[in-house]
Image 1 (cartoon, rainbow, N blue to C red):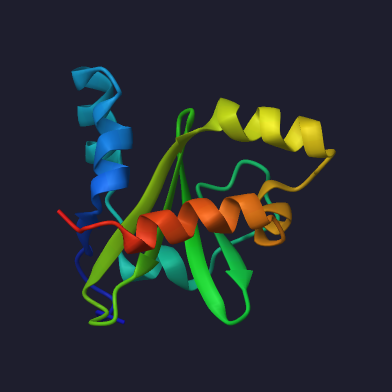
Image 2 (cartoon, rainbow, N blue to C red):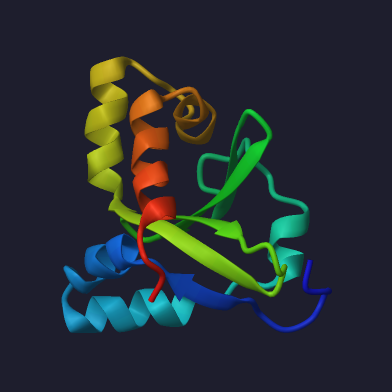
Length: 131
């Protein structure tokens, strides 16, 4: 990891950039101002709190992080260099609420770990060009 100081550089791919650009300009600025992630933020994540700002989602050795910003969920991973994070998706919470309701899921991060639909969204983000 980049060490216990400073914040990561944030890299959006073309999908996550398009998703965040759909927000009104003021909302974009608020989210980007709030989304300052440091290595310390990711060390001791409490995955069990419903109101946790950060969470983790794991599948087959792959680990993603989730950041809650108001009604948005930002899904990202640490880049190979360890000095940046790559944002794969920026999704509205209501999208997931509908999904969770329809599939009778309870704990958002744990259940997303097992969702093929979620991982397909992440894969699309991983394969998108970085901006």
